[in-house]
Length: 138
Image 1 (cartoon, rainbow, N blue to C red):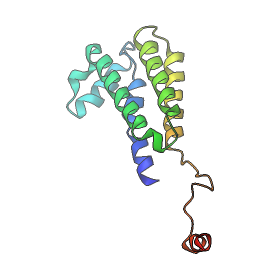
Image 2: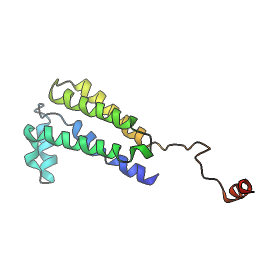
Image 3: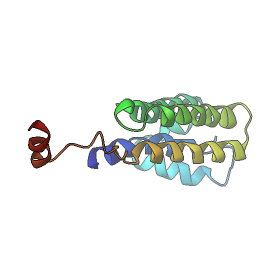
Image 4: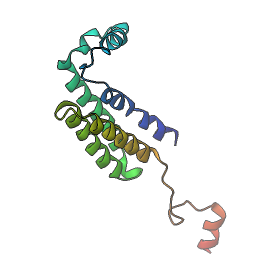
């Protein structure tokens, strides 16, 4: 179960970048400039880099959700995450709709949590204790 939560944490960069505005708000510029310049990434403030960076990090998040999906909760979380990622990109860079971006962000978080949720095995799938196996053999 510990590995599942570690894989779910890989979705956080994509979620975080999807919340960044397109630098359209002048009041936010100093805060973003200070944040990215403090770690040496001042060139990323340009909107030219924001679309590819958002797409790359969302792809990374989707890859984490898709990794060994058939062993966890199937491909449902991946499909929901794909829909949410597409909505983030469309809402942010095409439609410029904040409700779409925030709604898609919520769906991406839900997909990540659904992916990390432990799957309960059916009684027939559960391993039998050694005493039970001996009784069946006789």
